[in-house]
Image (cartoon, rainbow, N blue to C red; front, side, top):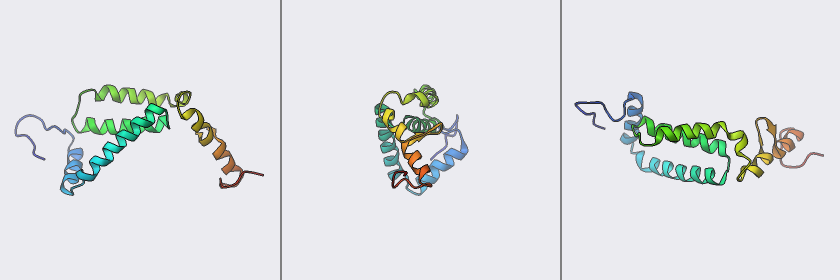
Length: 131
């Protein structure tokens, strides 16, 4: 990565620029681009269908934050704010979508679900129902 002789570099944070340069030097950009593309696809699908909405929002925030660190601006600050709001609304996000049925089965930090209840009754094993 070449730094401009005048003005400021596109990536303003030295530690992040070094990280990107390290990835380029080790030829990680070829496979890491696929990781980002599939991550965006899976996060988008999860948010649309309401599957693990809080975790999907956290993944989207992480991707968006990395895009902002890399120097892209466009709508990223607005999307970052919307991601934070969606993450804060995670407790009520399970009213619509797959989370409506998945979260009661898996459980949440404030209310253990059926799977967690079976595991707790069996001493940590969820392979058979409690007697």
